Length: 124
Image 1 (cartoon, helix red, strand yellow):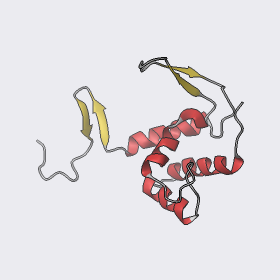
Image 2 (cartoon, helix red, strand yellow; image 1 turned 45 degrees about the horizontal axis):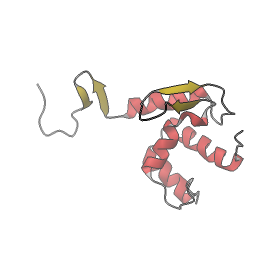
Image 3 (spheres, one colour; image 1 turned 90 degrees about the horizontal axis):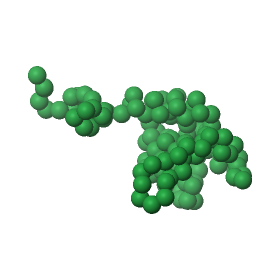
Image 4 (cartoon, helix red, strand yellow; image 1 turned 45 degrees about the vertical axis):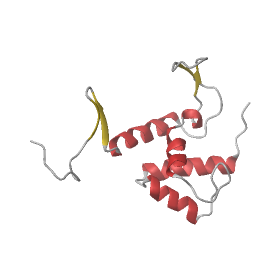
């Protein structure tokens, strides 16, 4: 059975809360570093990737995804696998917020930028 390290769990909860309060990934990185909170690998500097991984990893709920054997991309979901440290609702809210903030969108034609704010030419 998994044991929860309450100090580390509170850091994860804070990361989720800050994101939902409107903080950017860089903003969260700065908050963690100013507070001298170390990464899961005991480093002083946080990477954007580490924070994004935390925000997208459902293991912090009580669900877990198990990969099929071999090189298959199939995954099986197991619910109520362990005691979660964030609610499924909060996890889903973060996923929706990340999608809303993303400047990329997936269409039938592939991945493209949502806006043209930084483009030099306007599309017709």
